[in-house]
Length: 245
Image (cartoon, rainbow, N blue to C red; front, side):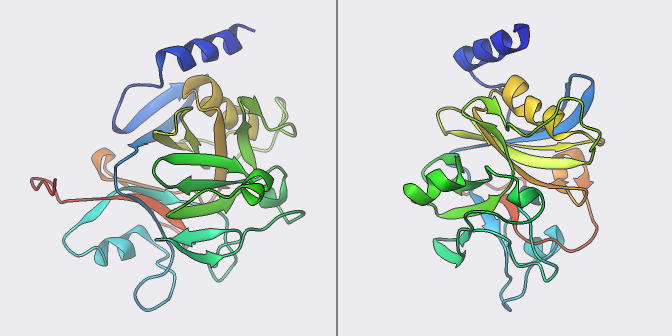
């Protein structure tokens, strides 16, 4: 009860006030959280100029010309050839259709959902998205949902022994701020979802992936490497010392 009251209070006073990426400790677990606000150049990346998946943060940076990634992380589940499992919209073009109904693995742990970048940000449960799709300049479908209308996914167990490095996204109630989080150590779904609901005060949040989860955060000296990735979400910024505004 005390936790829910604290969460409600945070909704009233607003989300954590920071910009960029920070280290956050919640309930004894360490996370990195990157905040992006509406109006920033947030994109989802999949294929490079040759039509092949980027696969890595460095490949995106090589193709940004005189700009660079501000932050980035993997943004949804993908097949072995790095094609996205679910809906993918890149710069207004639908590259993969919405997947509705039974599926495999964590993606198929309904309800799953969609992260949409439009005028603001939203995380929307898949069937609600299908019924009334918003205008998304970029979108990625993943699953499961972590938080749905302020409630944890009904299949998450507080005493689960399934623990992985996990990453995902939550959106503020006004749709103006997106919080991207990755755990420093192995956590359960229940623990990870509570971070979004009770610390970041996001009424809706979506799981991206586990075990392969990686982060690019130059301000923290972090540029994770590993197996090639599918969809990647990140901000595009001007190099330090230059203002494009």
